[in-house]
Amino acid sequence: HKFAITLSIILGAAAIDDFKIMGDHVQLEDYTSLLPYEYIKEEDLPESFSWGDVGGVSYLTKSLNQHIPQYCGR
Image (tube, rainbow, N blue to C red; front, top):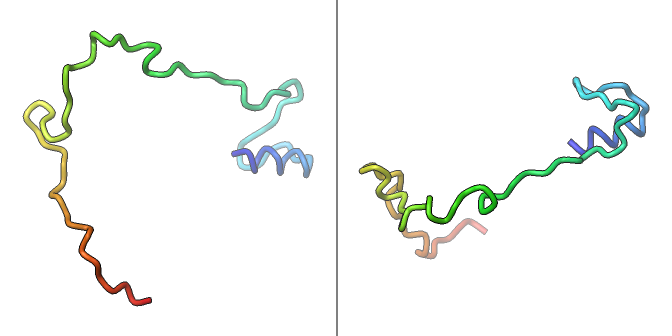
């Protein structure tokens, strides 16, 4: 994204793909977003949460032992 902006400024291109820099837009990244703690009340959060039980459904995969040393070919 920043590369396309920089490239279009350097080359003076009107558009790269369908991205066009307008003449009056000098502040290219002027945006803000609220963080979750700014719009979610603590009392609205559950006492506990587990991906292993979301409404009776587990979204976890089986546990894999990734600590067994194996030769990787190097």
